[in-house]
Amino acid sequence: MARDKSTYVCSNCGASSPRWLGRCPACEAWNTLVETAAAAPKAESKNRLASAHYAGASAQPITPLSQIQANDVARSATGLGELDRVLGGGIVEGSVVLIGGDPGIGKSTLLLQALDRLQRMGLPTLYISGEESGAQVALRARRLGLPDSQVPILTEIGLEKITQAIETHQPAVAVIDSIQTLYSDQLSSAPGSVAQVRECAAHLTRLAKNTGIAVVLVGHVTKEGTIAGPRVLEHMVDTVLYFEGDTHSSFRLVRAIKNRFGAVNEIGVFAMTETGLKGVSNPSAIFLSQHNEPVPGSCVLVTLEGSRPLLVEIQALVDTGGPSPRRLSVGLDRERLAMLLAVLHRHAGVATYDQDVFINAVGGVRISEPAADLAILLAIQSSLRSQALPKGFLAFGEVGLAGEVRPASRGQERLREAAKLGFTVAIVPQANAPKKPIEGLTVHGVERIEQALECLR
Ligand code: TYD
Ligand code: MG
Image 1: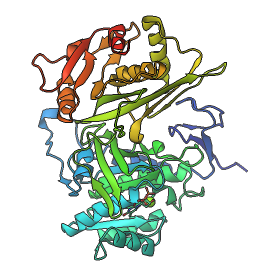
Image 2: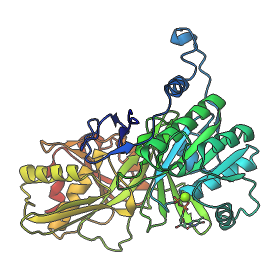
Image 3: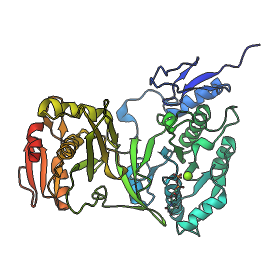
Image 4: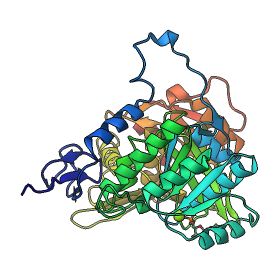
């Protein structure tokens, strides 16, 4: 008898392989291939998926771009300003949004708040909870100060029943909390397996495109690759938002990683309060720790995440290390740290090969832009020399392998924001030095890393 065919799907990138392999051939991650024991969805439904994915394109004749009607997309603003900002103005009709984040970071809270707003504006909504009972969701609503909320709740994990409910109820926005709890009758693998998560998400995407109902999927980010992380879904959906932030601090960042209907890397900033998430409309200074006097190993950076400049404190600790010294970073790229230490050695003669180096971006914010380089190097040098940078000091600029300091985008905007918050001295790339002086701020333009480090001699 022929065996049921199983495929192996990578829980990191979603690539599939007919055989088990130790390493995924697509993303090269180790030990991520998981057997999807059940039969694959029928070929017919696969084709339906393909045609729904490129909705409209298959049925129509080939047409020059200029003759295709491209109406503005219809959006529903949720009224939560910071959420609308990351979505690019509101939830787009028929779009699929994935919201990922660690458990307990506030995904369910944010979505319940958003749905309640929409429902109050007269848009029909539907909150599908696979994780919590109706009573638990109701308790959360009470806590949020919304005891009279009219948001319809369905507690269900069967995909077919959910689809049916959405089709009969016809909401404008449906939230699925969470995609990892759903299962489809078509597959025999357990809820949360890669195959189930993919099939359920594909099915809901099809539904959204066919009906114009916006679907929001909640996905838990898992550290281990054993349960399907939301990464598998990133390519299927229109918008991917991730929650960032330190669960110990009250601030939460929601970042758009992908957005077919808005800018990427846009961030929304919230504070978790006793009564839910509140938008922080002026977040520029929340990632600074409150030192009364300057301390060694700390340098403030102005970073441009999305459309707003943010001031973030970069901390470094350099300490005598063992035979194989450690390099650790929180919120910053570790590979980049290794590169910067090499630049520091070769071009400024500062050796750290026998030292442990730790760096941290305060407040759990993640910084990926290279404009952080200069602040990282100054924080390291400051820690190494036990010498604090002056009060009201900040720096930004990318550092190249040749030791040159390269300009950052929208430098004037960054400097003006810093001046507004009372910063007085800045070291920036020469090309970012302002032509007209900025009131209250002394700006030193530098071209090389050696020049920048002179402030610590
Ligand atoms: P939740 O939205 O349940 O997280 P997720 O869905 O991402 O797992 O948020 C849970 C955390 O938020 C929990 O630790 C309690 C806290 N919280 C508040 O501080 N204030 C509130 O008003 C609410 C509803 C939750
Ligand atoms: Mg939740």
